[in-house]
Length: 130
Image (cartoon, rainbow, N blue to C red; front, side):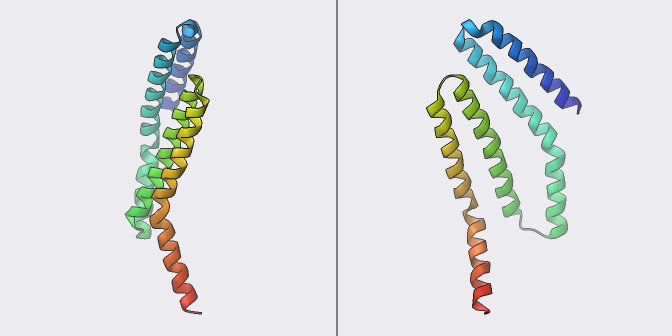
């Protein structure tokens, strides 16, 4: 909770500085990027216990680690692409923001192929037993 409050305070200070620097667009964009990087570091520390818990679930359920890694990669792609798209939008590049989102969707689909193949294999197995 402390990390959340500290990071939120930093973001609010960043917003105030961005309002002051609005005239200098390049500096404001760099400041926004720096604050976003700090938020990403905070997110990593906040999610660390969640990752540990998912590891416990994997061990207890004897789940394949590959599938958990795919899930985590997809979540990371979602976080990063959302942040990148917002930064592009703030910089006035709406088309680039959409391009980042499309790229993220395609990457998530590509990462999901092993899961889809596994589902297809299970479906073939079930249908073969009928």
